[in-house]
Amino acid sequence: MTSAGRTKPLISVIVLNYNGASSIRHCLESIRSQSYAPMEVILVDNDSTDNSVDDAEHLFPEFRIIRNPKNLGFAEGNNVGIRESSGELVLLVNNDIFLEPDTISSMASNLHDDTGVEGGLIYYSDGEKIWACGGKFDPVTGMHWHLLQGMSRGHSTPGILEVDYVPGALLLVRRSILEQAGLLDQYFFLYGDDIDLALKAKRLGYSIAVVTSATASHMVSQSVKSLEQKHELLGYYMMNRNMFYLYFVQLPIPLALTSTTFQLAFLLFEILIFRRPNSYARAKMTALAHVLKDLDRAWQARNKANRLGQLPVSLRLRDLLGTARSRSNSRTYYW
Image (tube, rainbow, N blue to C red; front, side, top):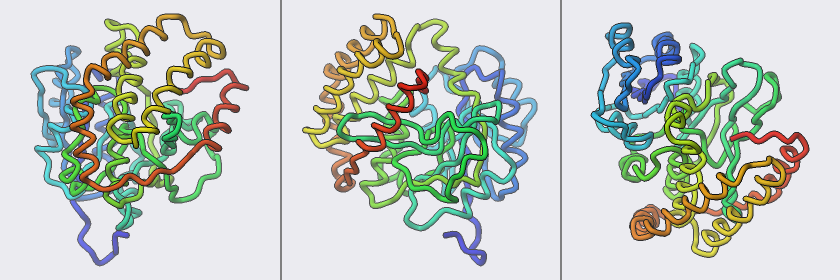
C-alpha cells in the first residue's frame, strides 16, 4: 500500500471522448476538482462531430488534447493517450463518468503492491442505484456480470473487494502491466478490453480489486448510443464478437469451447425470458462468424498472452446461478 512517507506516484488520467457533448464538461470538471496530486490529464478525441472537443479545449486549457483523425474505438483510442502519458499509474475514464472529489485519492491510497488493476464503486447517473462494483467472469460459460448491479445506494460493501475485472469506464492500472501486456488489444473496438486486461494482469501474478470509497456516477454507454443511431445493435454485436474472441485468446481450449457453446445456447434464455427479437440471434451468429474468420489473429494474441504466465482459472458457477435467478425473477436485464 502507498505509504505516507513515499512520494505519491504520478497518475496519468486518460479521458476518451466520442460525441460527448452531453457529458464531457461535467466529466472534466469532476477531474479538475480532484484532491489528488500529481496528475496529468489527457483528453483523446475519436473524431467527434458534435463540437464537444472544441468546447473542452476552450474550457479546460490546462488539459492536453489529442485529436484522432478517425474513430479508433475504445482500446486503440485509449492506447493513443497511454503512449503519450508518463505516469506510473494510468487511470482510464469514460467521458460520461463523474468522479467524487476524493475518488482518485482513494484509489491511489488503497493500491496494494499485489494489486494490478483497480476500480471504484460506480452508480448510475441518478446516484440511487449501483451500476458496477467490479465484475465476475465465469470461464466455463463465458458469462460476465457486474457485481451489485441494481442495488440501492447504501448497500453494505467491504472497503476493498477482490473481483475478476473492473469496468473500463473507471480503471486504474499499473503502467508496468500495460508495457508487459502490450497495451490494450485494439481488436476490442467496444467492450471486453477490460476483462482481457484483467486476465493478463492475473497471468502476471496481480490481483484485481475495487475500492468502494472511490465513488463515481455513470451515464452509461453514451458513445455507444450515438453509434447505434447509425448501426442498430452495434453494442450487442461488439460485446458478443469480442467475448468470443476473448475465449479463444485467454481460456484453455476446452473452456473456450464450452463458453462458445453456452453463449449460443444462451440465445434461448434471451429470447424466452427477455423477449429479444430474431435480430439479436442474427447479430450473435454474425459475431461468431467474424471471430472464426479472425482465428489466426486470436491465435497470435493467445500466444502472447501465454507468454505472460499461466491463467489462474476460478469457477463462478454458483455466483452465476444466483445472479441468473435474480434477474429472471425480476425480468430485468442489465448490460
